[in-house]
Structure formats: C-alpha cells, structure tokens
Amino acid sequence: MDQYAVWGNPIAQSKSPLIHRRFAEQCGQTLDYVAMLGDEQNFEQQLRDFFAAGAKGCNITAPFKERAFRLADAHSERCLSAEACNTLKRLDDGSLYADNTDGAGLVSDLQRLNWLKPQQSVLILGAGGATKGVLLPLLQAQQNITIANRTLSKAQELAEKFAPYGKLRAVEISAVPQQKFDLIINATSLGLQGKTVDLDERILQQAGAVYDMQYAKDTDTPFIALCKRLGVAQTCDGFGMLVGQAAHSFYLWRGVMPDVAPLLNGL
Ligand code: ATR
Image (cartoon, rainbow, N blue to C red; front, top):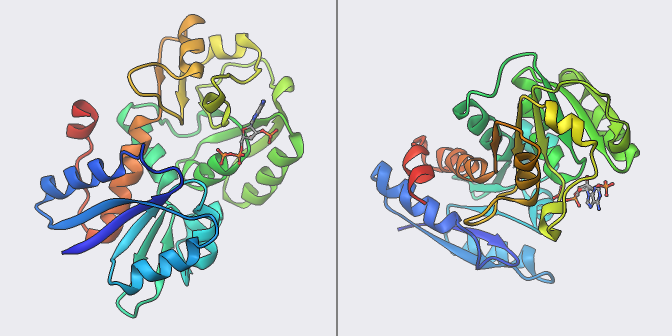
C-alpha cells in the first residue's frame, strides 16, 4: 500500500491522518497515512529513511518546514516563494519534489466563503513564516495587500520580495491606516499564547470580513472571539485552510482533487 505521513514535533494533535484517510475513502484510493514524530537532531536522516523505505510522500508541519525545504531536490514556484515546504512528493527517479499548499488552501477557503473579490484590500497581520507561505497565491488572486507587523523591517522585507507579483505595502501594526479593509487575515502566532494582536479596534470593526489562519477545537480563537465582541459580522477560523491545504497535497500526490465539504461539515 502506498505510504504517506505527516512529520512534525509535537504531532499527536495533528488532524492530517484523519483528513487524508477520509479523502482516500471519498476518492476510492488505497493508501496509508500516519503521524510521525520528527526528531530535532535527526530529522533529515528520518526523512531519508522514510523515503528509502518506499514512502510516496509526506506533509511537513512545525518546526520542520524550512528544513524540509532545504532537503528537497526540486521545488514548485509557490514553495520557492514561501521558502518553506509543507508537502514532499517522491518522484519516479527517487528525487524529492517540494511544494507548499498552505496558500492554495487559504485561497480555496476564501473562495468557499465567497470572500475573494479581485482587487479588494486585504490587511495581513504578521510577517513571519505563515505570511510568507500565503503571499504568492493571494497576490495571484489579485488581492491588494497591506502587511502589518510589530517589527516593521520584517514586513518591509516581504513587501520588497513580493513586489514583482502584485500590489503590496508594509506598515507597522501601530500605524495601520484608518480605512475599511475588505478582508483582515490574522497570520501572527499570538493565538497560541491565548493573546490577540495590538491593533486599533476601530480597524477591526470596519472590516468587511475577518479570517484567522489559526483554529481552535470546539471554541473561538482569541482573535475571532475579539472580532465577534467588536461586532464584526463575518468571521472564520483556519480550519477550512487546514482541510484545503490537505486537499491540494492530496491532489499533488494522487492526481485527484477531493471534495472538502464533507470534512468541513463532519469533523
Ligand atoms: P509563524 O511561522 O507562525 O509565522 P513566526 O515566523 O515566528 O511564526 O512569526 C510570528 C509572527 O507573529 C510575526 O509576525 C511576529 O511579529 P514580529 O515579527 O514583530 O516578531 C508576530 N508576533 C509574535 N508575537 C507577537 C506579539 N507579542 N505582538 C505582536 N506580534 C507578534
């Protein structure tokens, strides 16, 4: 049976095995997909052993996305722009092809919500790996992007790097202009600490819609909870992005695009 896995540390919480098994059932594909605990010291050797034993592909999650990126032999354009890999595929010649489906997963979820109008204004909070992973697909979807970050220089670096692909600018989070953004996306890591970003609440209140790339089981993320308290009518957490990125990985491996709807309704 074709072998797949998700590698991360920690990994016990990962929903990827469940998602991919459901996709396989739905698409009539026979495969095995398991969670693998990566080792900080030996991650590269673990991956080499995994593929030497015949595995066809894997997902990569924190903290190994950059290391998997460096280990791969070839990369998709969106993976190169993200400088991080969430999907590896073993090609017929044994080489490893790296992709990053996070941005495609986000774009698919925004399309599902009908929140992706061309040329709309999008405010992205944060300028770390999560932001870098989604910028190219968002710019290709013709979004006019403002990146706001606590550390302005990191937002500026991203704005310069991605300038050839579309319209984007960088601002410090305390200096976000008072305007109505069609969409605000939280890509900071603050929710993991139970916190929200220090953004002028009036900017959130005016937003057309608000998306949090993080998600929380059975509850709202701190950012979504804040937006709801402020009366933002349209809010969504990142569970659909998680299922979406998985669907794009599945497509890369198996050549079949699964339907995400049964999973979004059923998990
Ligand atoms: P990830 O891979 O999840 O994006 P990261 O690369 O460490 O993680 O980036 C974390 C992001 O959350 C950054 O934009 C970071 O802002 P800085 O670049 O200024 O560090 C943001 N972030 C983390 N803690 C924050 C805080 N207390 N206040 C504001 N922003 C914060």
